[in-house]
Length: 194
Image (cartoon, rainbow, N blue to C red; front, top):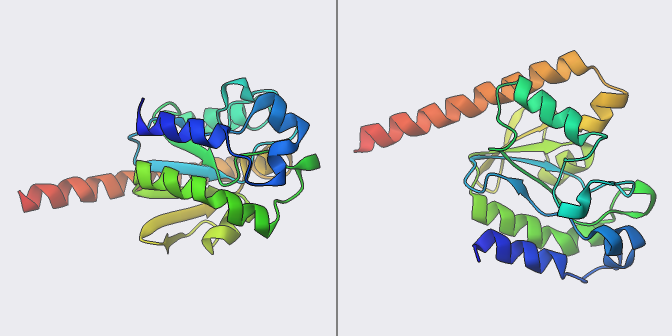
């Protein structure tokens, strides 16, 4: 069993907070990471929707609402949605999709930190206001968080229902450019050092 599989199993069995008792979490389980384990880019949302219908496989952003929409836009921006890493800060749904409490975040953030330790991303992309606050990020700007580069932007569900899709496409293309430059710089650096 890989380290990712072990972590996913531990997340599924977590009962550290009251969210694990909600019917939706009992029925569908908690969400774990999805995508390519060796990806150098990690997209992170707030938590799974309580109206989810997509989580029988426990993956993030795979549903009909914002999941397919987001993955489509990722592919249009030049990413391969199967080769990026996607997760949530909070692994359980909240009742009626309320914002998770500070206590819930404090309890659950251990799992996200473990994912970051395993992936070691060159770039973390925070999706939505809750995630931006967690990272102390600036909207659509590159910042630092514990030695990682972070770019915070809109949540795909917000964009789909209230936002400007064309603007979000441009932002995703900008993220792709930043990511490609980071990879190129790393290749140049390793070539110079060898």
